[in-house]
Length: 279
Image 1 (cartoon, helix red, strand yellow):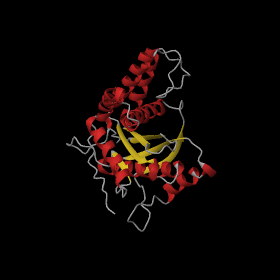
Image 2: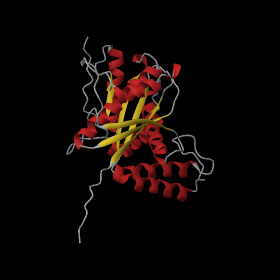
Image 3: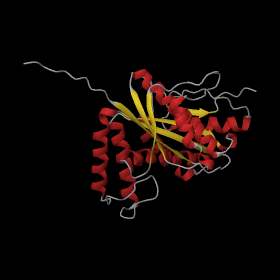
């Protein structure tokens, strides 16, 4: 009898979304992506489906961080989101995030494009370290002039421009850039819940809502295991959490960044990034 061995290759999925897009001074725009290992994707999708059924959600209910589905109480809704976060942790997912102060962003559309560039580059780097390939799925949106289509095409054909590099950097570990929308996959619900949770916690800090501070720190602690970390380390490198820009010249704005970084550290998201204040 002749045995035939077939090597199986898995491709990681990277679902992306943004939050806090509204241009509010003193607050941070967020962009993030969740990396789902290819060999875990089917199991995680089934698990989220089971959690939806257990919670009593209708099959056509579009699950997001907000608003609450009408068929759930507030407590049931919180429990469902926590269960989905736990499922992502149990399926070895990784969260990669980017934050920028609105005061320093040219405009929300430009800031979002920079966020997409950053997390996609970091996804490429993470794939490179594990010698894997991946597919990027970006939450569908229309920016002014609908420029995003061209930007995604450019990322695939040319790459992205990075500071201090004369030539574009090819994202060779990413085999495609595509759109997704809420309801088209359980993973769009997952990334919306992750980004929405991080946004809510950061806004509690930015808006100085002292009565919600403990709740926000608890939510950050729940998210913490998902953040990308280098093997054997507890701290989160800038691949996992990137503050942009890396050098904040204004002392007042730099102070906002440092306070946010320290707040996240209280929530067990111990960022390694050195946010400088050079002239």
